[in-house]
Image 1 (cartoon, rainbow, N blue to C red):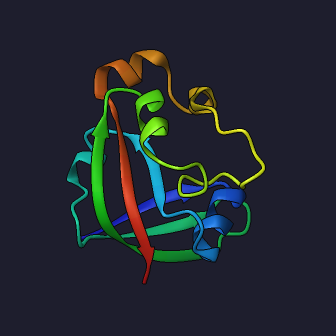
Image 2: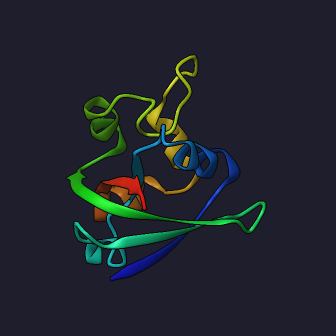
Length: 111
């Protein structure tokens, strides 16, 4: 099954370069359908460029804090010299949404 998602430019480029191997999302009804072996078509919000990845694994966590403790920062899209903070994810999701659905780490590889 193929899924579609939009991304900001920086994480898109990190996936394209092969350094970002984990996509983090809310574990809502849409993401509960993602299975190992599925593909995701990412669209860059800035350029419209698209790339396809294959899902290699999924792992569900209660919070982004927990997810961040289980993955190195480069794999989730940060540069080695950047500070990785789960608080950043609150720009996209409310505390209530996270408490209701939990979050998912989606392991990906370029097709």
